[in-house]
Amino acid sequence: MQERIRQVLAAHGRMAADPLDIDSGADLYEQGLTSHASVNVMLALEDEFGVEFPDDAMKKATFASIASIERVLSDLTPEA
Image (cartoon, one colour):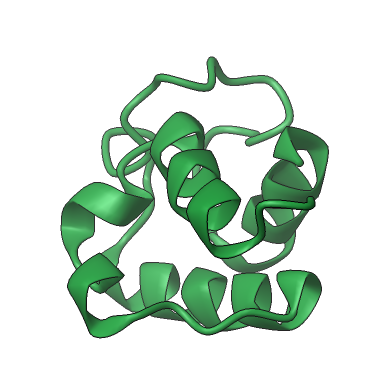
């Protein structure tokens, strides 16, 4: 799952750091992710995983790290 998340971040995150090389716990906002780009990432993740982020997951903390994105996606896609 992390590989797919990293690919989405690489394609849509517009970050200074390469998402393929950063630690899964690293703060993505410190790596250059903007609030606007996080919306694009969220939409791309929804398409990639066939899910819809619930309202309670629409917060900055959800997209703060690859690990936090993975936790939320794991809850939405238990079989992934």
